[in-house]
Length: 308
Image 1 (cartoon, rainbow, N blue to C red):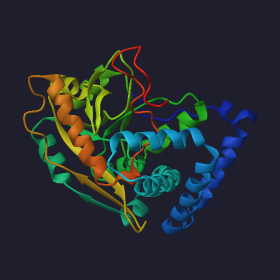
Image 2: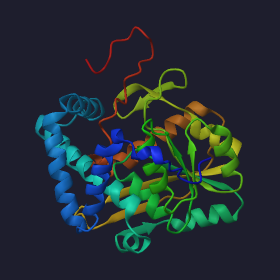
Image 3: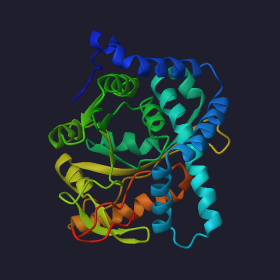
C-alpha cells in the first residue's frame, strides 16, 4: 500500500527537465477559469486527432463495434467530441492534483454519499464500481472530500510521473494499492474502507471470460468484482462522474448497493457488471475513454483481430 509520494533528488536529472517544464506550464494554467481551461483542452483534442491517427482509428473502431446503429455522421460527430473531451481531461487531471480543497468544492456536486456512509456504518467495505471515464481523476478527488478512500492503480514506469500521480491522488484520499495486490485490497475493504474498482478494460486472456459488451458478443472481461466483494465482505456501489455540459464543474452520482452481489455464479455477476458499465457509459458517451483497444483479446488465439 502506498500512503506517501516518495521524492528523490534524482528526479532533477536533465532527462526529466522537459517533463518538469510541462508540469510548470500546467501549474500556470491553474490560474485560469475552468471554462478557459476546457476551451484549451478541446483545441488540444482536435489537434491530437491530426497527430495520432492510430488512436483515432482505435476509437472509431470501438464506436463502430459498440454502436453499429449509428450513422456515419453521428459517429464522426461523437468521435470529434470524444477527442475534445480527451483534451479537456488533461486539465481535469491537473485540477484534481493541484486545486485546493476549497476550489474543488466550488466546482462539484455529489449525490448518493449517504449510501456509502450507510454501508460503512454497517461494518461492510465499499467497492465503487467505476469506469474509465475521462474525468475519473477529478471524481476520486471530489469523493475524497467527504470520504477518503483507497485507489487501485497501475504504478507509472516513469519515476517522475509516478511521484506526481501518487502525490496528486493522495491529496484527498488515504492510500493507493497496485492493481495486482489483491491481498491489500481485501484488507482495506475489511477495515472497512472504500476502494475504486474498474472492470471495463481488456486485461488479456489469462484472467478473462468472454461475454457480451454492448454489441460485441465475446468481449474479454475480468471477474474481479465478485472475488473482491466475496473476500472483502463488501458491497458494490456503481459510481458515475461527468464534467458539466457547460464546463463549469463536475458531477458525481453514487447508486445504492447492488442486491445479491456477489451471486452464485461469477459469469452471471460479470454479465451484470457489463450491463452496469454500459449504462454508465451511455449516460455520457463522449466522456468515455474510447482510445483503449477494449476488444484486442479474442476468445481463441487464431481469431482475427477486430482492429484490422
